[in-house]
Length: 570
Ligand code: GLC
Image 1 (cartoon, rainbow, N blue to C red):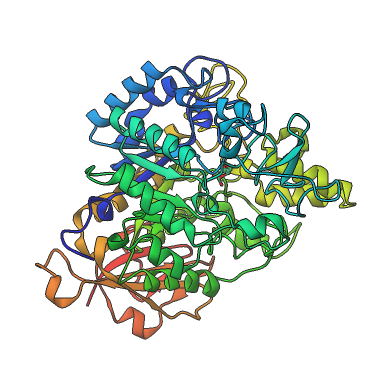
Image 2 (cartoon, rainbow, N blue to C red):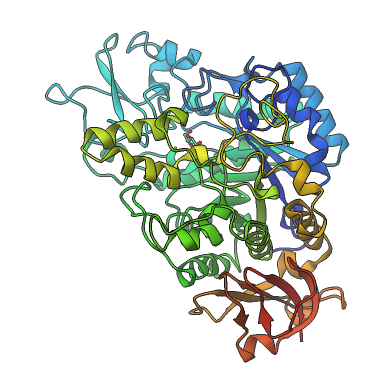
């Protein structure tokens, strides 16, 4: 990496999923007014950047990831004036704001798609991906991510259009230069308005393979032209602008691809979201089929990315977001007891404070830019829904209907949703224990509060002193800001095969360590409910305590259940 290193190597990002953050107008749905009211909750954590999930005009077929006007705010969330006011408030607190950019597809209600379907000869027709029927059917058997065929019939034009998500989300045609130009202009207008970058939704899907589109190959994304598109976008939008952050969501991306996407010399993106570590606990064919995984596999996966992007490129670090279950429930003590099988007396709150803070410690001490998803900073747990009527997510509802239709017992399908549904991360932020919705709203919220409420609330967590998950996050973020080792140090995994110990070192090359403020660090974490004796080779390295989730160690050579500590290396 060329010096000086970019600002975001020392930054932490906080993701806001607006409809679940805070409701300012009493309609049961979170909005910009609610977010503005609670900005200090985010600022006090010490984060540098807010990533705001979509607030654009949208019919909400996929909670805003179906945009019908990229340049206006949906009335559900507020107005463009409220957005501008929010941006001022964010900047006033010394934070930056990154918008979600959804340009693999639009809403079917977008004026572009309305024009495109008017006739085959309309210039905008080619802004989307159309195919004639083959023998009266879809051109191939591609399936959409949220179930059903990826092609929908349009009677007006007598053609099928492609949608990799719902039929209400037609895919844009990135081969059309006018469409690309319109996207770049729109992006530039947001940057001119003052926003500080973009999180780019499924951006590796924009380059489709023309042959595959007409055949049955499923190698339709991540085609070589993806790099051309991103380089062009960089040139037309990002070049010459200071202090932006660009992060591409890239399902299926490999570490080799990521090194290309994030190599600063190639002028594409700052970092990508990869999916390898969040794919380990389910079968490759379906995220709803649970697959047992162990700690060595998870450690190895993250370590591979650390090494793979060490010389060139940059990692983004995340355990959750609005599409993933809660880390405490997925990787914490509750998941460990769940692995013993259904009915094993699983307690969703087992070692909750310890699990939340351990997982945060491990994540934030990796090399890369950490992302905190709203609610993880207070240790929220999965929704715990037990009836299909509680779910709202289009993916969950479609999958459930399909699975039960194919003969899966309802109870098994509900069990899969409880483990995997995106709604696990979408329950409202429980600000306090007041009725009816924990200070999130004065009305019934659009989705239930989840099993964590009223036990878990922001108010209770922030009052919990040395057992506050929020306070622990604040310390981790502060450590990153202070420590060059945390920002840039080389990562080395210790004891890779140990089934319960997650241990690694971070160290700057001797020549670049400027002073004693940057000593090498060793991180040790016990992912088990039993005491763990540190192997001698690890214990021998642990010097002064920098930070721990349980305070001062009981014993230097042992870790208590779910204890995590950061030490200076001896
Ligand atoms: C991304 C988003 C997800 C959305 C999908 C389609 O994966 O994170 O929420 O449903 O893209 O836009």
